[in-house]
Image (cartoon, rainbow, N blue to C red; front, side, top):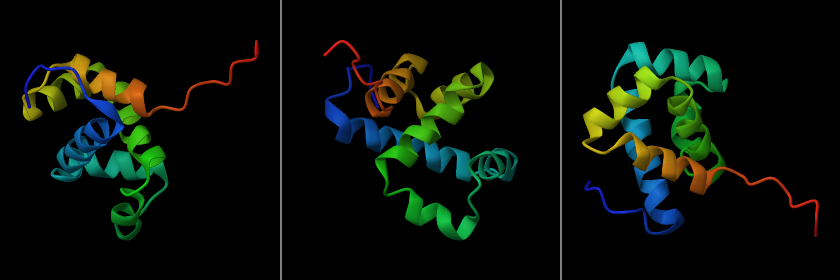
Length: 98
């Protein structure tokens, strides 16, 4: 992946899937993620189809700067791209002023 801005939710979802694959590649990363998400290995694949779950994957990585930097380095992207995907996929608060 290069440094170009993400183009839409689909691109953000692809990056989130890459992050999930990175997490799943190492037991030391996967087990804490499963514990935090409440999922088991059998439900992980099914959950990966849900945009809200993918936002949660990015939320997990964004919650620890060391993990974020390691993930970005492994995926050859800037941490800012992961942050951008996280913002794009995360639910936005309702506008109470409408």
